[in-house]
Length: 293
Image (cartoon, rainbow, N blue to C red; front, side, top):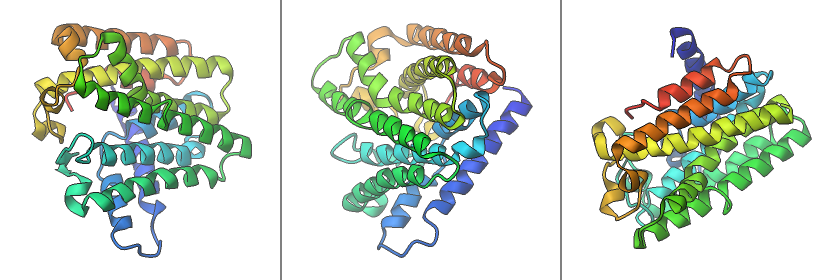
């Protein structure tokens, strides 16, 4: 990714960070609830999903600022999922983004409530988005609720937990990750289209891109879980293997997995080639295919 595109991503991330810091500012104290919510929400990370929302909006001819409430909403839902995913009842992880996980700092009960608070507040961000029409807000709520719920991320999480008890086929593993990881990534891109009032053809191209990007992202995650270090990743490595979960690496091996990542990334880029202002999204897919964290 060239310097100009990196600066554009940095600008997107800064805009999202500023908005996220302001979301709960000035709220009346509720014990440790807001500190716990902000502990995870403001812990950094790649901010892939909100960047996708802003940049798909830009590519479809909209103003990224109009999509900002939607970008923040999808990041809040993502953060809630990480808090709950790390709980002892789920993956029981101690480290996230290089810091102790939420329940290690605030206790399990507060961590659960922090996740609940972020999930519900995310939809409040959409409902209060003055940059969007009522129809756009309704479409955004519908898209995010489907991606986050039983037909998306939550459905994928239960399949992930059930997968600890038996070996999964490749088709089952693809379906699990399409729901658990891919659904929210695809939704992030769709939200940008909604904010820009994209036509059906452009929205279909963006969704094709995002679906391939989401699968490539997860396969690369499985690779890094074997090849990286906890210090670099900022979270435990080898946890899937230790819990007996089926991953793309256990099914296909490292070399075939990386080949698949590269093919998916090429296909993702090809879906957007006809469109102006898609250079950043295409560069992002290429960079994520080689990411080391």
